[in-house]
Image 1 (tube, rainbow, N blue to C red):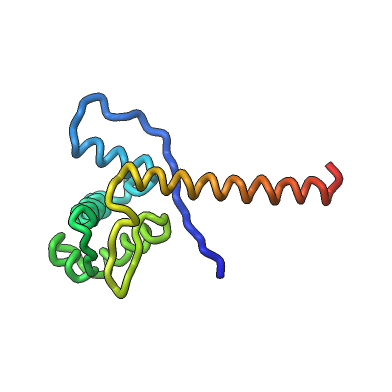
Image 2: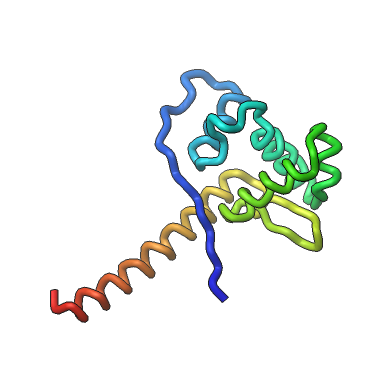
Length: 134
């Protein structure tokens, strides 16, 4: 089975002043989660709800998220799938939770994922170089 994760790291200037909302927005934008297409900030709001649930060590269903956020279940599922694909959210029996309950740990997990991927790339690159005689 091939496990695939897609995460985009975007280098953006950090917020100039300490403001939790701006820093959360910067955090998600730096992970390529929140973009111009999220005009109503629904993905951002979903991320916050998942963060709250993770802090309480509780999973949450798409129906509960849709109700709390006054969004359609389809919109919630669309955003949840993006978060699952990026490796930030995990699913357990139609319920969802952030991969870890602390954002610092989330960054550490993403860093491990990136390091594993780079290690695999380096190994394959070495094999290819040997194969083509470089």
